[in-house]
Structures are given as structure tokens and as C-alpha cells.
Length: 173
Image 1 (cartoon, rainbow, N blue to C red):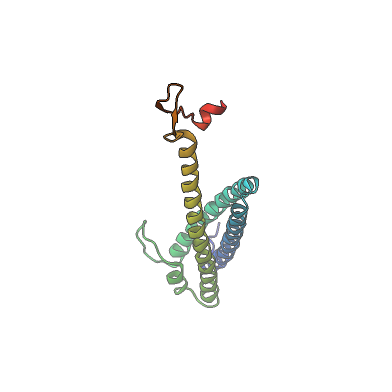
Image 2: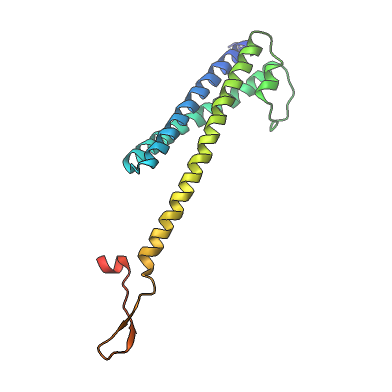
């Protein structure tokens, strides 16, 4: 069985990079939608989006593994000697290809970089929002479980006494 040439592999890698860019674009759209759901506290929508994100992220990981395999095969086909754990940038690899594959691969790489940069910005915003929400939730839980110090009250004898403060969870259940 004949091995695919570096040109065919580069063509397929370019297609794969476009697919990855589209998948990351979908993830970015989901992240934006999740932020909107967080703004209106729509927990059902947040859960649904999270489930979709998990499924899509698994597909992205699978495709990323395929990208690594294809990159290794192109390196082998070009006769480049790379240590097994060496990482070559796709832009460096593209420079060793003939036109039009070189420019096609470079274009696909740049497109993916743009989408990933957008995702990173969304990830930062989502992380900050989530951190703030968790901080507030922690404060609510402390308030509900601590009951506070309580107020001084006067008993039947006219002496100051501490009131018996019940925690919210003790009071309701």
C-alpha cells in the first residue's frame, strides 16, 4: 500500500485545521451563550450548554490527536529528522512545503490562532465571573450555616441573656 505524499497530507492537515477552527468557533459561541445564561441566572441553560461543551471538547481532543499524527507523518515524508518529543510549529513545517500547500497551511494556522485568541479572552471573562459567583455563594453558605452571634435579650428575671440563634439549616430541617 502506497504511503500518502507530504502534499496530500498537507492538504488533509489544512482541512483538519479548518475543521478545528470551526469547532473552536462553536465552543466560543457556547461560551458566550453560557455567559448570557449566567447573567440571567438560567441554571438549566447553563447545564445544557456545559453538556454540549463537554461533548464538543471531546471531539476537539480527538481531532487534535489526529493533527499531531498527521504532522508527524508529514515530517517523516519530508525526511526531517526530529527527536521523538520535539515540537515543530505548523508555520515552520509549512515553510518546508511547496506552494500552494505552504500558503494554504499558513492561512489555516492563522485562522485557528484568531479563533483560539478569541476563546482565551472568553475563558478569562468566564473564569472571573465564575470566581466572583463562587465567592458570593461561599458568603451565602457561611451566613446560612453560622447563625451569627445573635442579639442580647432580657430574660424574665431582667438579666441580659444571649438569644439562642438557630442556623438556617437547623431551623428548617
